[in-house]
Amino acid sequence: MSELILGIETSCDETAAAVVEDGHVVRSNVVHSQIALHQRWRGVVPEVASRSHTERILPIVRAALADAQVTPEQLTAIAVTHRPGMIGCLLVGLAAAKALAWRYGLPLVGVDHVQAHVHTGLLADPQMPLPCLALVASGGHTAMYLLHEPARTERLGTTRDDAAGEALDKGAALLGLPYPGGPSIQNAAVSGNNKAYDLPRTMLGPDSLDFSFSGLKTALLYTLRPQGAPERAAPPEGDELRDLAASYQEAVVDILIKKMRRACEQHEVQSLCIGGGVARNTRLRERLRTDPVLSSLHLVLPDLSLCADNGAMIASLGSILFRRGEISPLDLDAIATPQAGGKAKVRR
Ligand code: KG4
Ligand code: ZN
Image (cartoon, rainbow, N blue to C red; front, side):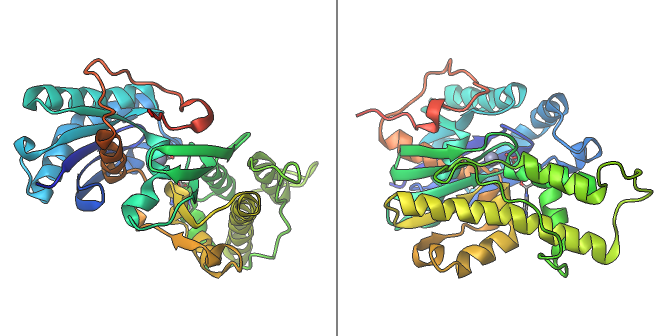
């Protein structure tokens, strides 16, 4: 009989649930995004987010089961994000998962959200050769990992300041573009000249695999309004806006590409996978497909629905952990911070 795992995700601003069969067959993947709710604040408001999760979680779980044509009694286990994230948000998904696990006598599996992004390649392409270099780039995280084998990962580098998505969100705010910034900058950049403005690519030390985006954001600020110049009467528009958006996006993508190339020089890598909201970026995907070094690896560019936050990736890593016997107790805690050093918990 096949294994059916319900995955629940509420760590940030997506209320999500999915049913995954045998670790990689996505039977359903239902996501409710709260973007419209947070747009006027240009970022996620934790209290607003957790209240919305409370309203949505049960309908979303019901929809995931209905789409998958699965009853709770047929489930093998329930996987849920329990870290990292906003604590009030995590608690909503965790409470729902615990209640369902208790009611139906199902095992509960606590999943680390970042590790779920790192393992998305195995969900999208179960034959993906390992080790895999996994880039996780979202509004809250930007880091590179080596996925040595399922549930054994090593963090190679992380951001020292802003996340890549955060840089795009803040850059969009400076350009007068709507939140979330990644998609708005991508759209504005379509017919722009990405070489029009010379923006910095902060690489840190010559061997560093860490990221830094805060200088880029400041450079955009001073490009728009040079020091000592009077405040602009209006945000840029027309060709100036398109060129600025294209140049800014190119700088973010360039940093990500250069760091991934560096990681490949320093480590034995068979495949490359990307996850997180920024992994939806068209230009990043195009650059990966055409990069002379990176495109020679086994490239896994997951479907857009698996890049942003979703329940399928939680169910899929949940399946790996479940098979390893890593069942969580019903008093599993929600934890705001990522695992130390980003290492997945491994029991040998
Ligand atoms: O993974 P995600 O949905 O949520 C977390 O932050 O955990 O990522 C959201 C981030 C935002 O910063 C958003 O601007 C960015 O992903 N993003 C994009 C694109 N779509 C979303 N960045 C670049 N290009 C996109 N197409
Ligand atoms: Zn995420």
